[in-house]
Image 1 (cartoon, rainbow, N blue to C red):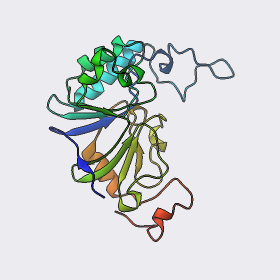
Image 2 (image 1 turned 45 degrees about the vertical axis):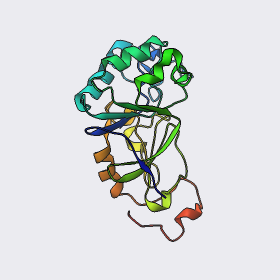
Image 3 (image 1 turned 60 degrees about the vertical axis):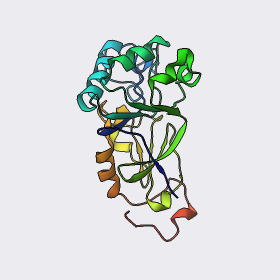
Length: 217
């Protein structure tokens, strides 16, 4: 098993599910309702306006990710129409961005107005080596993945897990902004966290772990 190195410059950061411009994910503007008619706390972000959320997303990324750094986004970039994609990207200091497509990235997947040219790469799934570690990157969480038994790290988004639930069994992590205070993760920090975690799977009886239960690495 040999994962190719990702084209990167500077420090490498990763994030997912920014949902820039998404009205319904903002608690103060959402049309979503629970059975008792209230805005759902667990599935909305604690902002009163879309602008407040957008500013927090931009500030969080730009605080950490510099012009010469690399940002990996695992999907669901923006909402509110095609133009919001370009507005969001232009506001980021870093333009060295790799994108793994999410379920809401239709305009990018269809390459409307050649929008894919704004990214270093665009794909649905990626097996890659970053800073000496192998990763499986996908918008969607996988129960088992290539190299799980060899310590390959799986990073995903999609499910908007809070901080206390963002780790799966073994070396799986939801890197969405909802589980990290709206900020991106550095790959270096993820590697440090994952080096301490046991190999594991969310799939009961996964034979790839035979003889490996309890092994760190």
